[in-house]
Amino acid sequence: LAVASSFNNLHDDIELKQDDYDHLTKREKSVIHLIAQGASNNTIADKLNISDHTVKTHLYSAFKKTNSRNRVELANWAQRYVSVLLPMAK
Image 1 (cartoon, rainbow, N blue to C red):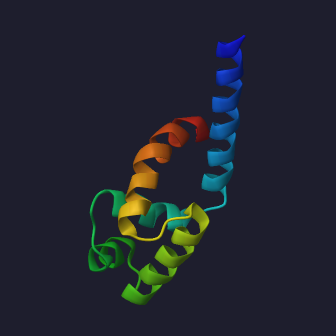
Image 2 (spheres, helix red, strand yellow):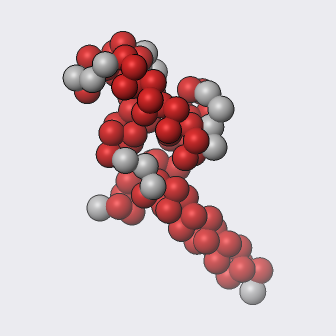
């Protein structure tokens, strides 16, 4: 019974995180993936063909949506959740 309860709690947590991921725009997801790889704002701007200012705008929005305070927390969020969520999204 305890195992079933733990599984249900994990399932609920994954659903919450899937919902968090779904609220990100495609561009925010791209920026998050590049942040998780250690890319700088300039590198992200070059790879996505956007301005440095636009990168900062997407970062700010991603920080808010993931409750991250900085790049390190955002990268940690990506490491913990995106690897679980990407296979689920397919």
